[in-house]
Amino acid sequence: MTAAGLPRTQFHVMTKPIGPVCNLDCTYCYYLSKKNFFGEDNHWRMPDALVERYIRQYIAAQDVGEVNFSWQGGEPTLLGLDFFAKVVQWQKTYCPPTKRIVNDLQTNGTLLDDEWCRFLKNNRFLVGLSVDGPEGLHDCYRRDRRGRGTFDRVVRAARLMQEHGVEFNTLTVVNRMNAQHPSEVYRFLRDELGSKYLQFIPCVEPKGFAAVAPRHWDRSLLPPLGAAAARPGAAESVVTDWTVDPEDYGDFLCTIFDEWLRRDVGEVFVPIFDMALGVWLGMPASACYFAETCGKALAVEHDGSVYACDHFVYPEYKLGNLKESSLLDLLYTDRQMRFGLDKTDTLTQYCRDCEVRFVCNGECPKNRFLYAPDGEFGLTYLCAGLRTFFSHIDPWMKLMANELRAGRTADGVMKIANGQHPAAAASARPRIQTKLNARCPCGSGRKYKKCCYAMDQERKGQSL
Ligand code: SF4
Ligand code: SF4
View (cartoon, rainbow, N blue to C red):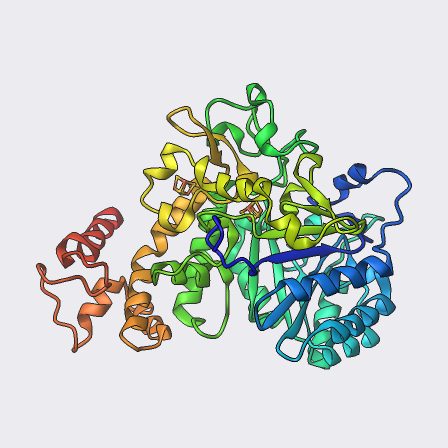
């Protein structure tokens, strides 16, 4: 085991074979600004020999049965089908019979056609389709170079993939606008686009700091007052206008969670909900953002350069280059270990004392640019929303975890959710005799009167 708590050979790489190059010009894209890091004479295409070398190394380095390749951009489909046909061929060449290859491709969908879909289907690629909601919300920031909205092209891509049986997920950037319309976004993705796996990524982009990693910012330029001053629209704001408001983000997640709980458990998958359930069941967080430590998700650029993380593609976080070093040698350096451990070592006292720290862990270091209420620097910009969300789901997660531990399926909670609060609904079930001094049916281990009953009473009082 490593200091970061994972087996030596379990790590993930995000591969960007076309660097930051894209056919669109989305307002919030942080990749486009990375072009400056790679110099003028760039070809923006990973050379064949380097792709082959990377594939060979990556397969050999993974000690797990399933080797997962993640292809991202920019827009990776700009490389053309020939590029990915060669990728698949090299994967076949270097994959031993004891391993299985899985490919993910993250795309804006605009270049997908029948030929692409046939290829993706035949080679069992899992596609991540970027879509931000119904037309008005999607086109708000996701525009092409001529300023035109891309909604129609994305919907067309989804339909094509459905016709060809290509498996796809949706990836939605939760931004300033769509965060204010959670139900519309969720229902559009689920009902109109037919997505069953909905990934939500908060848009957090500092203003004027793009060239420097957050840990190295000049803190004297940051608002000292904490979250309120940092938010979009505030006079001292340090984030772009399209950055999500942290409280909107919390409300967005809570609203979608409530709808999911009433009708979609077991049918629709939202990674942050699954991750949370795992944590409430006692497992480590499956997403690096919420894990205690990180540093096991490298980024490989088109020129072979390897970075500590896709969100830390800055010169000071460059670990080396595949042309000169092996992936494993770059991963298991003291420097990268330190990067991963810093996530917990630099946690503010405010986070350490927080009641949802066990599931939040201070979120991602890239967003830690606020002063905490006690004046310590390094609180995540999303804190207010995350605290709301994790507190909101707490009774339900306890109940779901309890159901699973008891050998029942978690989707039984949908029936309860269609009643009222977990405690009230659980107490109505004949098999549970809930007395005020008995253990709470939500599984918290506390007395009912001190746990869900108390919360229920509190809510009733608030709603009077
Ligand atoms: S910096 Fe953030 S995105 Fe990168 S590995 Fe750590 S938690 Fe994950
Ligand atoms: S909710 Fe806020 S205070 Fe609590 S652990 Fe997360 S970031 Fe820290």
